[in-house]
Length: 214
Length: 214
DNA sequence: TGCTGTGAAACCGTTCACAGCT
DNA sequence: AGCTGTGAACGGTTTCACAGCA
Image (cartoon, rainbow over all chains, first blue to last red; front, top):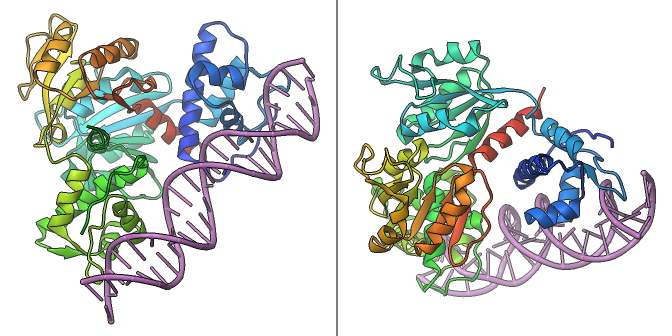
């Protein structure tokens, strides 16, 4: 029922579980369910019921003892907790295959996330548009455009050599969070939050697991 | 000096650190360094020296007390441990923006990983090629082609609705490991290893961190 | 009754600190 | 002397088990 002050530290694993939980709730809602319980959620989606309760308890008392959770209400609370109750504008640096793929992706273009522009240094690309119509702008205009469009999140989809400098530019442009796809571990760059998504690492991790077999 | 039997369980975090460590060694090698130590590695690359030693100790005694590690030797050992001392062939299901971007990516096309084909159900794409020349084949031919080319790893770059069935097809085709980019948590699908890379989750995680500020 | 919310217990990964080897 | 390899201490996260409330 009641909300709690946000704890100073929440583990990344817990954050991911909350995102996943929100998705589960959307599924239940699509089925017109009005009420659920940590046990039902756990059984249907392969989770742990105690963990669901603990994860939620960090942010408030959202359930009703003896009953469970109201689906619509819990979904709203989770959206608020995760900051998904408003629109986040994105800029993508690097209009190569990956940058354009992300810009046109369904998942990056809903109500909560919106790509405002792609940026590149290649004069042949500048002035063009992605398939879904995201404009490709000159990377030197990034600071101005990022501020004007009030973009908060920057995606790095440039080659590894260009990544550190591009990251520095995003910071200058007032970007608050960076999702880095270049295979280099960017350290924290205050005041922005950095998340590295190293696709090579995932592949090598699979290779490692394959190596542990006949 | 000596190698050890592979432990039954290695944490994912440790695996990622070993991949990163291998990258650091490549850097040192490019600088013609022949010897290094856990302390040097830790200081130069922002790691923890005890953790480096612990991570390595799971697989053998690779160092020399009082001296450190020989760069070339340690790199070779790590490559073996991670299974990167041979070529892994990949198939990519879904020749949309993301699939093609991955197929053409530098990081997915070196000596250790090689994309053999893209697969799609769209007749207009079938028979074509990606920019770097990866052929786009009919998804119904996946089992045959995957076996003929001895592909071990399958990448799922299809829309979320198509992901579960496409995953099942990869298993039928004898694929040993799946890297899933669709925003759905695929459970384990024995005998294959599954790794979910949910880009939406990363974005939502950043959103959450942004929500914890003024 | 049956669920949540939560202390306590178990577990796992990281860090410390040093014995032992070169 | 100096580094590795490792048992022991620590801290954080997950799981358990139940008190307390609808």
